[in-house]
Length: 299
View 1 (cartoon, rainbow, N blue to C red):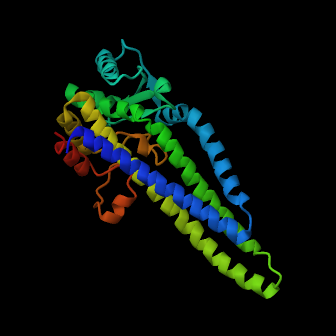
View 2: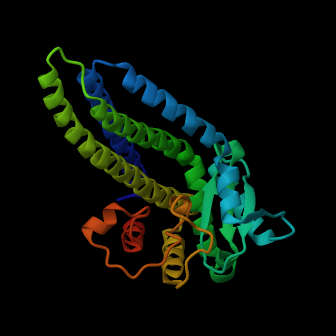
View 3: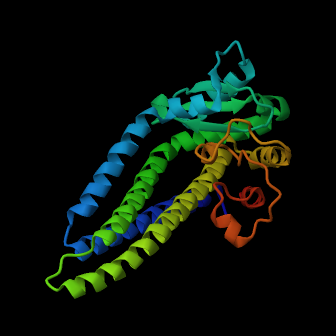
């Protein structure tokens, strides 16, 4: 498999997952609207979720940087890092992003921002200390690929969809307690009980299904950024070597949280749990072994 076919494959899989997500939401909206004869349920849920996610999209970079305790730096503070970012931006045809450093010994990095013109790349101090130049180039290329691939926009779209599903499930549960309009009070009671059970099932299963699709999209975007980053540096081994070193570091990133974990180059948490197929469903990143194997297969 070549770098180009890997990129195309990951793009197709990402948009396939998003298409499935959209169909899932439309199906829920159709079900809820028909059950209660209220098609406005879907429109309201989508509109409200889009509004909140849109507002978050414009300010997400500031929020993430504050939560991560990242500080902006200038070229004189880290000249080698700046040269690497500048060279890769020129090669990738991207504007130079703002560069931040997180004072943390655990090696990691992330990119954020609403678009390429307002992007930010943040790296930990541990990343600068532990990695060699070719490895650092691989990590930076991966993060710049997230910017070039417009992953922030994709993530926002997925957040909108997840929020819509959660809202619809919650509405479904609440409305099931109100019961349905019916001429026969006995029918209303029976149908109300049935809808209450369905609402409870929906409020549990729908957000879980939505979250699984969200995580699947996130993992596919990581594979895509790996392939795109390797294409940018023309040296997949540098990125693979960085993954080995980062995954071998024993400590977690101090200020990482569940809300920001998916942004990082590699999972910021350290765990000795076995990666069963079920456990993998809930990972924000593909297992490092799979990412390295994919990079080694690129020619």
